[in-house]
Length: 305
Image (cartoon, rainbow, N blue to C red; front, side):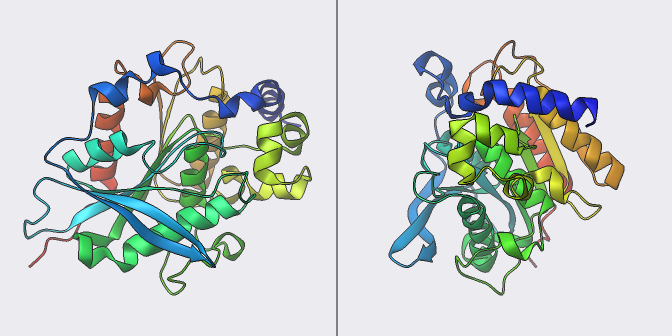
């Protein structure tokens, strides 16, 4: 086994159950200090997918000048929480700031591991992309300019959006089947990019998410599995001293991206011993700035005539 791969596996086993940790009140200062701007319109509880009686919902955050004669890039916002906690409001403060930066942001809920195991959450985020593309005209979105941002477990899901376009087994039946779930740019913060069967055996959190401990399922759930030259441009933001998700996870997917010739950027966030840096006031402005610059670089909406 490659030395880097071995390091990722062993370190991840040690911290696997920490994926579900939620930051305490002192670590959630960004939510308080960067609330959704009053100029941003929020349209809540919009159904984007249905599985029998289960109705999946999202909130759309519209830029202050959303009525102007111009289309915008759309950004899916996907929460963290160890695949087991959180809701569509959890990353609402991120969606609000992205809307302030001129994007149409959609903060989504997805099914937790307690409700449905892998690949249910992947089905959900792909269904959300298809929904946003299908309803692009309604919200002033350019359907050819849709990206995604997520943190921790949410980073895992958006990284799968970046790498697994066209993988039929991960599409699901959440609706708008004729619409593409391909995204044009992804920002993954503290990404869970490599999952190993040993993690499922050692970690209750990973095991609950996968619903299995076999190597095939772990491989199928790993974003690195699908990296190719067609993978969406990827921005990785990660603290080198992350105590929950090893920095080597981002290093590994960056390496595979470069080998495949796909656009990738890895930025070290100087947040000592911090996992969810995006929740903390000192690191939030640079997070939004870097994410916005990346999205603007790779998603340039076609001007409305």
